[in-house]
Structure formats: structure tokens, C-alpha cells
Length: 147
Image (cartoon, rainbow, N blue to C red; front, side):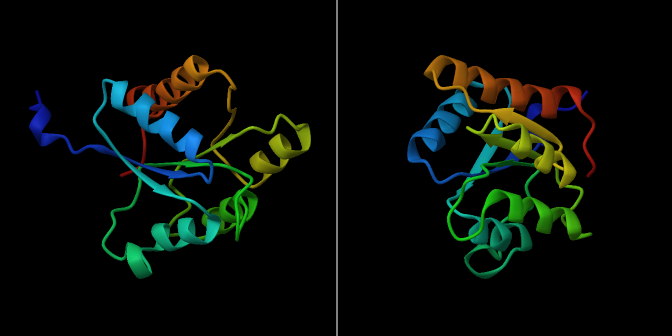
């Protein structure tokens, strides 16, 4: 049996420009049972730099999971998703689209671009916390991820 000290924290990249949603995600992950490191970038260009280890992100580890908002400055989430899934070095990283959009066209397009999951952000605080916990639990307790 593995000692908990031998297990590295789960690395999650949150690509989100809304400070309130960032804070909610941070709170939800703090309350969760799993040990995780949350990295946050506020726009699509920064997300790509982070994922490629460029510039200010040259020493950051690759995330185990990306939580991606669709409506971002500089490069929107759809563009990020398309670019990540085209890149053989990045394409295996699971991407959960986490957005306010319930638009069927956004849902279909995200899956066409090969997102791994599409989740609509709840408005209520407690519901948002539960959604983040459920994502964390599912992706790191149920699913087998590539290493």
C-alpha cells in the first residue's frame, strides 16, 4: 500500500477570467479529500504558454486535468481546445469545459473539438462547489488517466 506522502498532488489547470469563479474553484478544492495543486491562468494565450511550458511557465509541471472556460480574452476556450487537441504532446491531457453557456451549439462544438466533458457552471455557490468536487472526484478517483 502506498504511503500518502509518496503520492504527488493532482495538478489542475483552471483557465478562467472571472475572479469569483476562480475563488469558488479554489474553495471547493480546498475542501476536497484529494490533494491537488491548482494553477490558474486568465486567458487562452496564457493557457497555451502554460501547457507548452513557455515564458513565465517554463518550470511549471504539466497538468493532469484542464478546467477550461469558453469565453476568454485574447484566445477563447474553443481555440484553446482545438489547439491542444491538435498537438500530439498535449492532446492526451483531459479537458473539461466548465462554462456558463447552455447553448446546444457550444456543447456540440466543444465535443467536436474533442473536449472530454462539458459542464455548465451552476449559479448558486453551494452548487458550484459541489460541481467542482464532483469533477475532481470523477477524474481522479474513477477514471484511469494516462501518465
